[in-house]
Image 1: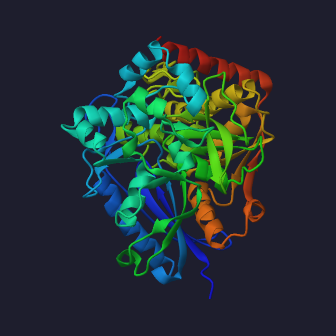
Image 2 (image 1 turned 120 degrees about the vertical axis):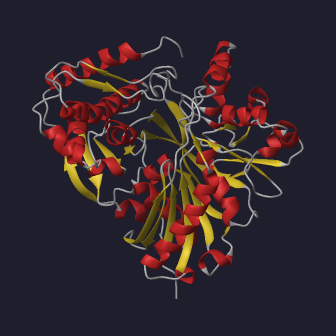
Image 3 (image 1 turned 30 degrees about the vertical axis):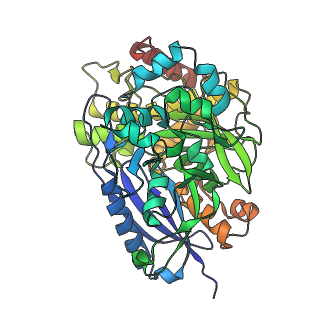
Length: 497
């Protein structure tokens, strides 16, 4: 009997989740666990990867059980992960030498500025499609090697491994048998030449990262290894890996140039497919891998916003404005307009198209009439304004304005937000039947390699729109609100890159 179920392991910034999908893309079982965030200094964010590993094992077992299945019923596992988050571990023992440095972490901002000042920007962008920023992995690796006693010498001797979270989990799941990643995660390191599809010695020298630390780079769909049998009672092939945003684009079936998706989780990330040739951005977007299948790369332009759902979490956990994220929709709708209040959620700097690591968050336009509802509404509006920033930059780089924006992630369960997105962009917003398309994309990649899914046409055919939000706002009002946002951003920019 052919196995017809695939597990997606979705390791995110605040939680680890496993979802079992069947051959039709239906969800059969889900398990999820949140894990602690560590903030050792201003702008620093760390994860204990032992927390992540413990939760990974637990959610895999729980999801399979909730689906009423056993390990031997599972055709494959696909992994998708928070990108750029950097782990360095001992090759011999598999033990990390330090907590993981998370993608949001800004501790290497000064190092990045010194590299930009030294004229390295063009070299890095030409080879990697990226801008020099502490967001990416390379300077995080260098920081670990410089600050953990003895680490640099050990790395030079080949005793240490670098990996993003996918790579670390693949290592652990396979019992240390496999040190590999996929092309999408590699493309976020600032060490990978996206045209040659290989690690680059010149970049390794620039960032002082020994090449011996780096994993093998493989296609997004194919044989990566297998789990140890004791995890789920059988050895399960691991046959798909992609960074979370690329997996979401894959799950949204953005296979044709010009198709665009935007994911709203901890941050917000918009990708537009640009085909089989990389085009470098002139408007401070990133050129990145969309996916690589059968050795053939497909590229995307990406805009990254550091704070989306994290802003709502801040309203809940730090201000106490809401007890549950879902309350923001009713709060936003409870007032007739934003009352001139803008939130610029630059808690960890601003991403595209500003790339200002030193910007900090602000609430602007407050009066004595301002309420908690106005602040909650402004936080949601900020997500749409930042998306407009990205779509405008993509259009300026030559990408066609999308006929519709496909959205996903936990935030898009919020109807108010989806409608305001459509209003602010002036294009339809399509919410799919399965909004957790990051996990679905990982499942598709794993299932394509094992025959559970027939091919890209079958994946595209399976995509279904649950609700389409048409823009209702007039152009004049749209521009007035967006102009207020642009003025608010200018107030928080640091004047430094």
